[in-house]
Length: 66
Image (cartoon, rainbow, N blue to C red):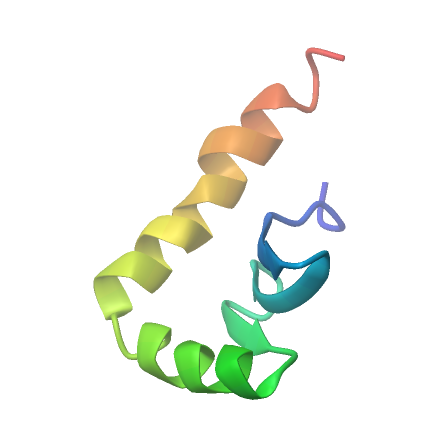
């Protein structure tokens, strides 16, 4: 169960520009806009904590169902 990760990706014109990765515990930008947004979004500690909790609440909860 340690290798399960929660990923929240954002796309524009089929190009991923930002992603939250639960293994890293932060947003990572892949374009110029994505990097700027990641810097801003990573400052919101309550949002980061909520996304980190999604791994346990969503991923680990559903792993045994399938």
